[in-house]
Image 1 (cartoon, rainbow, N blue to C red):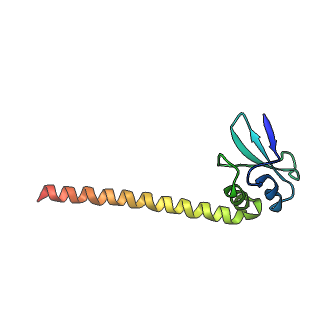
Image 2 (spheres, helix red, strand yellow):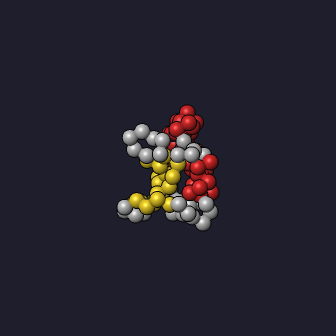
Image 3 (cartoon, rainbow, N blue to C red):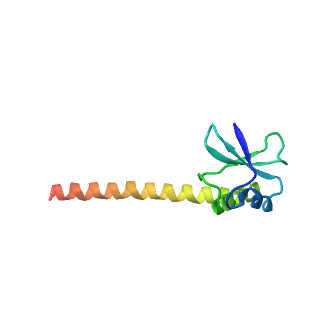
Length: 109
């Protein structure tokens, strides 16, 4: 069951409307999570799930960061993270290879 949040300790349910006037927050009791919805969305009002257990400033920052208007920045960030992970994996494999070569050279001498 989803319960609309109209009042909370940090007034996030009202402050989120400063980002987009159509935003509202619900708590999904089945999944035990907060969700952001938008009255102006076509089809479904769902926008995103909040990855925190409480509503606080992080919620507002998360919603601003994940807005569809920021899609190019988000995709760039994903690409950068993927390249970073790929480079770290390559570096790890290369390091393991070098260690194994060094070990074999020690065994030969």
